[in-house]
Image 1 (spheres, rainbow, N blue to C red):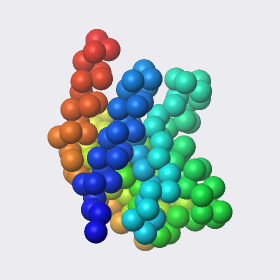
Image 2 (cartoon, rainbow, N blue to C red):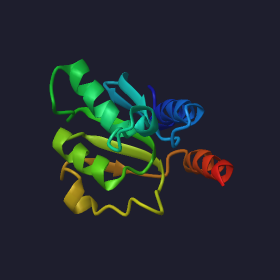
Image 3 (cartoon, rainbow, N blue to C red):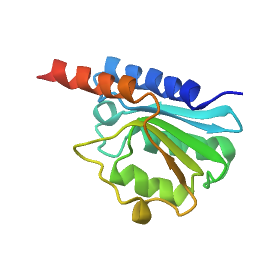
Image 4 (cartoon, helix red, strand yellow):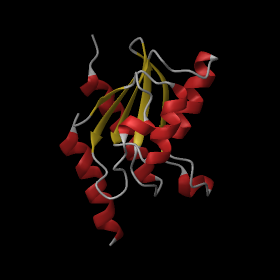
Length: 143
């Protein structure tokens, strides 16, 4: 049986792809019944679109894969805690579970009682050190 660490490593792989493209290294995968149905990374620079976050790209891909807008039986794995925009979008997808690596100490601070669907399970700290390191390394190089 595949676990949160396995899928978070896949999200980290997507984050590395973002980093290689000059994007903020955030990556994610959406899993349904242990099958990856979507994977994405930040594309805000590439698409010149402030809404092209990894999660937003993945929500669209997962809905397309399932042929349905609701992701109730799915889990989102993302290396950084979703921002308020992505958390709010997750509400509308009714995603069953969100698993993230590290907190976004500068921007996220989301109120889960408002932005997440009441049935969404929220788990943080999976591969937290690896998730934090990729972000720290990226921003250190930017300075």
